[in-house]
Amino acid sequence: MADHEKAAGIELRPRPELGKLTLRATDEVAKLAADVLGRPWPAAINRAAGEVDDRTLRLGPDEFLMLVARTTVAGLVDRLRPALADHHHALVDVSARLTALELSGPMVRQALAAACPLDLHDSSFAVDAATRTMLGKAEIVLDRLAADRWRLAVNRSLAPYVEALLHEAGREFGVRTRSP
Image (cartoon, rainbow, N blue to C red; front, side, top):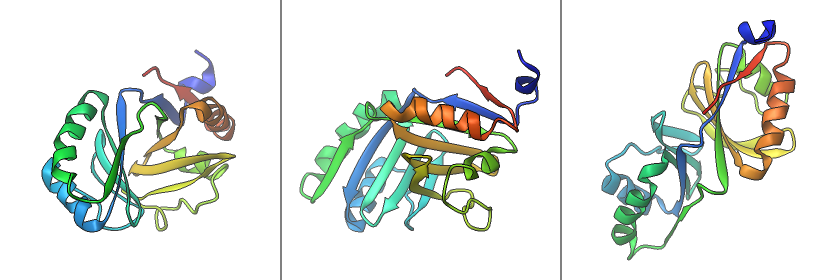
């Protein structure tokens, strides 16, 4: 192991075990979905709610992204479809399209800031903030899980580019990739 990896300020971890569902729905239908699933739901746009591996992000007025254990996706869909059948909505399993990368460590914010146009300071992008943005030339969904822990959701085809970009942006801090 190289010296810079031993003192890594950033750990990059692919999260292939996470499934992803998108829900497009009004507030009323989204609340119904939250009630059916018995899970916390973000009320405000660009916010997230739930636990690290069972989380819902509100990306727009009618757009939600759920990140859950991949093994639970089919069961969630089976519970939601009949409950939402009489309501205008779109529920799509996007697990094959999106992949998740998790970053942790004291220097993650600085590395992300090198390639992301958002103000990622604590006062602007606090824990449980979540939004669509760019990282280099790739569109991502960025979710702040904790003070020093972040998650990106990115199109699977762009994941190698994003990983390489993160290694370059975090080179001065040391980036270590952990196996999933």
